[in-house]
Length: 328
Image 1 (cartoon, rainbow, N blue to C red):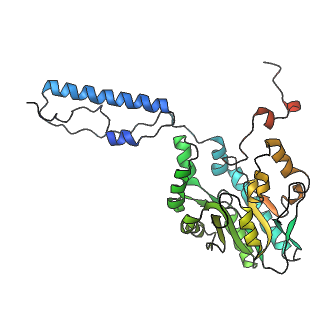
Image 2: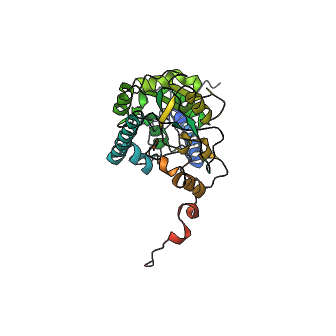
């Protein structure tokens, strides 16, 4: 009667735990890899049984091979945003302008804040009056004051796209894998010293308030205190809309400047699903909103993710500006 088969003495059989943990982007490549591993194990076991292998050899350590789909370099947008000197210079420049504008604005006590009032439209803006409320600035968090280096590394090296569950795990565990945006710490310190309250309005989840506050505080961007100087998704209303949180902040403060990396960091009006790519661009770059950029509203470049990364060829390139090389 045959007993249990002896362990296979082969260095070509993959460690099943290692094989199970390997991540690849393309499902077809995953299936091929799985079939190849299964066939190798089956053949190895058969050969051992037929040969009557009675002793167990120590299997040599197997180095996990690099996935054939692992890119050689990060995507171009990540190279620019997280790795380039140009990106650092751009954000330092923006934060200096943000600081200087705010310090000048509080000297004259503006009549209105830079937060749109209830009833405002893209065609007809209305602003929340300041009254005698103390001054504050409101900033987004991700890719505005901190860089999510750990999360974006994971996406870059695996080739995976955004997944809510993975982002939730990042919010819970990634506080020590972020870095402050160049220029943020010194600019915000100067504003606090001038008596301006620095408030964060982010779409990170309120259930992870402690972890988000930790990420900000440990990088010199605090104090961040939930529902006082840190507002998150779920604090006011539901979903990712930020206007409700801005309205709540405006009940207590005169907001003299805002900063973000998406148009939704300034008004939810820009995120209307009825807006096409060109209409959204024109709404931000023309009319009554154009004068706000650099004069109360400050945009930070983010070529990596967000609602700005969309559009087909005709939406991105006007028909009368499309050129094809006549030499080809």
